[in-house]
Length: 556
Image 1 (cartoon, one colour):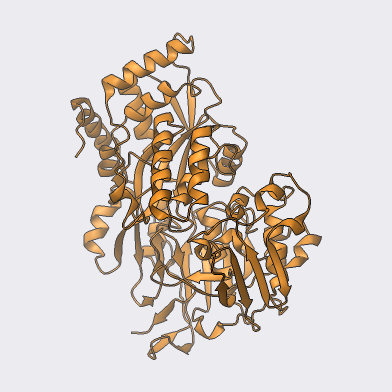
Image 2: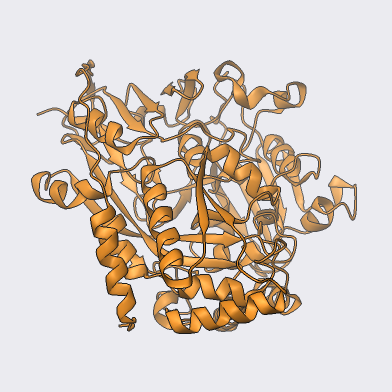
């Protein structure tokens, strides 16, 4: 247990007094009736519409451009990769019915199932995957996740414009059913990557319509569901895809997503029967309601630790955050335990590193093998570092800066608590400002911010899903952080097939990241949600993602 100075207990008390309970406004109850249908278990089920909240408009529904949880949640229903995850998080066949791996681990040969079809009835082919993956790599597409293909021969050179020859990339459709992929080095988690949304295929008709991903009528998917309606900033409706190869396992009559930014309204809709699911990862339960609901809704309430990190990022190209001492001072001057106990109240764990628990290391959990004790909370040391940093920048005082967070009651309360801690402990003024999620993402990508709220969930079960984010010029490195030493360690981990060597390199890289502090860890996430009785097989996995595609409702 880490010790904290007595000033923190005073701040914690202030926080508890500052939290204002948000009232719930009931809405009219709506019916959700459906015809009887055969269920997964052999028992009678009803073809219900599953209803949940996604909190905000998806930033995009183009798999090549997705980079957020909201978009990813919708992609789970609309698209499908070569593989997908089962209820245990294991990689299983999806659009690819099988695959072979060469003895050296460098060549994967996928066989696309012959009954795989797009939602318009066209066959899904290996050519669609070659087109889609190379499209994501094309610099003109602007995919921030293109680096996830860098394991493939020639992918990085093509994405970085060092070659314009797409044929040099190791992705090739041998015929309509056979896709060959050549890797630079053995990658133990490559199959897991093929279930990640940036690896999803898109219909080749997208070449003729730049705006295809913004309209339900022009989105052609290959997943269990298809989009029937999109009322922007209001709701999205999915219905079963009659052309899906595994359509007999799709039991819901549809999936309806509302876009409610206010967590109290979301909870009210759940309590009046307008939502079947409330909470993370797609929505939010008001923090002050969690202790009560945990007791009053025991059969519906779920708390689950997940492999995700909540943190703030600094724009290291902006004064005063171009000074590492200033960044460290801000990171050391908050009380994480007070935040998780008095603000979020959902079982989160204070973080002093970046990689969360739940990610595999050499032989067991990475966070068990590599302790996150890179820094401590210490107000006196934070004041000292801040003074030194400002002196080095030749600043008489800390300038007024802005902390941006995406619109959410929870993010707002965390931001207000941290801003107050900085005011009390360091005597500085930071203005907290909310932005719509899509705006926040655009501003972060453009480096148009000073401090920004951020969160990161695992794309696959390996520390690399966190560590390669911050290589120099990386698509997700929106901090300006650059370290040749860090880059070399990530490159070493990429190239090695030895897990012990890989983990050691990534642990050393994480230490550099925390020493330089371009990001400020706050806590490791916990999923808190409620699910109405009768709904079965709604899966939230180790990283917190929700899979509703094989869900069903069991009649009483």
